[in-house]
Length: 139
Image (cartoon, rainbow, N blue to C red):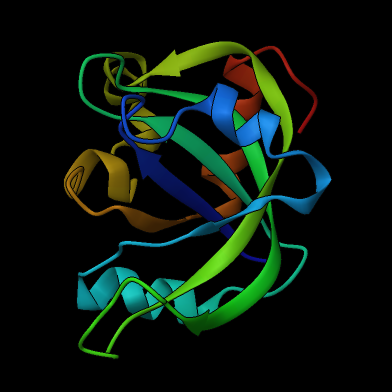
């Protein structure tokens, strides 16, 4: 199973809005980066991802699950990009900030640390486990 990280500006789409979308979840659209598109295309139903608030908060705040694999993004007039659907699973016991992630030596190679602008990115299993542990959750 692969793990992912989905970045969103809370003023555009927040964790609270993701939770409010319930079991039906919502589409993750608007990705216009080819590497992020490649990551979306690789996602499989049932895979988990971190929900990350970018901009001011800069923290992982929750866990989502892919509930529909890659399909065309209805907001892309070029027809080149797609999206997946995700639903909220649960919030982290406590948010894990980018500052905290960067301070953790074992996370030095994490994509979030080295390419923080990428909106959808892979997370290694060891990174996934460590972040859950930092949050006080069972991996």
